[in-house]
View (cartoon, one colour):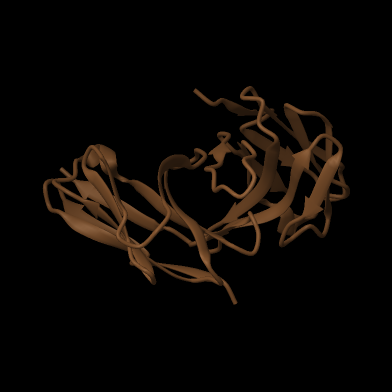
Length: 115
Length: 110
């Protein structure tokens, strides 16, 4: 079974703090993704990575950065947390097959509250 | 603009009452359509991938179908444990990012 783990289930941070969210997958997947999920808006892609040290912006990258130093690990960084970044953060991974469609597998999520 | 719309937003059924959830999409070429189940406070769990119109897939009480404009998730004789939010996502030919619908919250009453 694919397993995607996230470093925290719940996190409370203060405005202006630097926040690190970590994600680890154990299936040797090439692709990794960070989403945020807010009620009524569906999942929105923040960043994704298709290889070590490679990253691409998603739909809402502002205020976030990412790091992928090892294939199994993908970190999301909130440089200076703000209250509008309060959300559920979901990490996902998928294998790469050129030209094919493959499903993404998700971690349990991190509920981040910024006060 | 590529778009995915799910309806209804919420659906309440009695145990054993069959129904369908809808996912309509407009994309520039469909590469694949995904259905996921999400329980409260958890990450989405993959259910099905559909690739072309006419395709159907089944898993226990769930059956997913696909046309050129929409997909249906049919639930037959549901049980309370089927209560969850069901998410639909589409991959367009133009790239490999997924476009997500907002989900349908399904509640099955015993």
